[in-house]
Structure formats: C-alpha cells, structure tokens
Image (cartoon, rainbow, N blue to C red; front, top):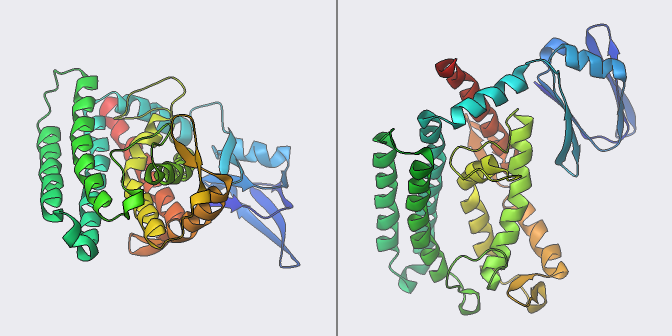
Length: 337
C-alpha cells in the first residue's frame, strides 16, 4: 500500500519495525502505527515532520519516500542498493531499447486513436450537419488497423528510431482527421487551421495547450510514484532533459482534455479578455487561466473512470494505470536478464 499524507502538521517516527504516525484532523489528534512491511511507498506533501529514524526504517525496507509540493514531485529518497524502484528503472531502460518495448508502448497510441474515434462519434450526434464525420471516423479506424498491422509485423532489422517514427507518423495522420472533426464542432471564431504549440496561433490551440500543460505534471507525478523514470521513453525521441515517457503515456489521456476544451468553448464561458495577443501568437491571459483551470479540474480531473470495476477520478485512474505499466516493466525484465 501507499502511505499518502497531505495533512499539515503530520508527524512520522519509528517505533521498532513500525511507523508511528500522528496528525490532526477535524480538531482531533489521530495516532496510528503501520508495519513497514505493509508499505510500498511514502508520499508526503505540505508541512510535516519525518524523523531520521523513520527515514532509516524506510530505507532498510526499500520504501521510497516521495516529497510533493502543490501535488508536484520535488524529490525522492530511496535505498542506494537495488530495490524495487531501482530494479524497475533498470528494467525500464532495457525494455525501452527493445522491439517488445516499442510494441508495448504502441498500445498507448492505439488507445489514443480509439478514444479519438469515439469522441468524433459523440460529436456527430450534435454536429452531423457541419461535416462528414463518418468519413473522418472511418479514416481513423483504417489508420488504427494500419498501426496494428505494422506493429504486429515489424521488421526487426530496421533501426529502432525508424520504427518509432513510422508509428508516430501513422498517429499523426489519424490526428489530422480527428482535429478536422473537432473543428466542425466549434463556433466560427474558435475554428483553427491546424495544431499549433509554442506559441498557439489561435484561441482553440491556446486553450488546448494550457489544458495539456495541466495534464503533463499529473502524468509525470504518477510515473515517479509508480517507480518509473519519466526521462526513459519507449516511442518519442530521447532528448536531453525531456520527459519522453510522459510524452508516451499522456497520449492515452489527451482526448479527455480535448473534450473539456470543446465543452468549455461551446458553453460560452470564454471571454475576449481571456487571451493575450503575443508578437507571434496567442496565449491565455491571467484572467483566462483563472477561469479555465478550475473548469478543467472540475469537469476533466473530477470525472470518474473505471479501473478493474471500481470508479476513480482521473488523477487516481492515471496513477493506477502507471502502477500497471511499472508491473509490466518489471515482468518484462525476465526476458532480458
């Protein structure tokens, strides 16, 4: 289990082979003892105290201690010997350099494309008169099949970078059809020519980029807590100081942000003063961020998803899936011993 403490003023110390925990909640002091053998990770946020004895107990039992600030990971303490986290990351490196690793991560691209197709089917119900959704959905379906055919029959003699670029290319073509369908569903002053990033060239992309920006640190935090290295990716190109695994995994959740942005625009919550005009593009203003961020937290991050027949809010759902990725990485290590 994970020991997650976000309450201000918590206190953790060592009591034999157990952690002694004391915190105040609703005006009452709560005291508890948990055996170190039952804890996989300690996740600590806000202002609290952990003694050196408790830290030593965690190290002795290969329990990583992860520190958060504003729900973002800022540091980690773990055993200097090979423990679960270190083994996971060593396995991850080996797996990322293999054909099987590429096939494994290509499933995340497939999930993204399937979710894109499903969202266009949803938009078709209310916007069918604005464009040929059937054709767009069919094109994405065909490219999803092409992705499956390619990954199931990879020529293992090809350079890995060429294989990865082909996969990204297939996904990119499908995404063009997808965003064409989204464009149909937008009001005239929010339509866009194409995806634009740094900077956005229009209002839609300014909102979308900010929404993705809220999702990136969430995925990174979930990967770190699961014991994975966010800098070791499977599909996206390795670049210095780039969290390539975040870029890989986030693909599965982009359409959730897309839905939030389209709904935000169509509910007419956006105002002209929500945007700043830059020398070479457009960005959200402080007022825009102040209105848009709470909406995404409520309507997207506050949405429930099923994981193994239980409901979880999106951040917890992503965490569960990152744990599953870490488990898969540890299992695959057996192939490369």
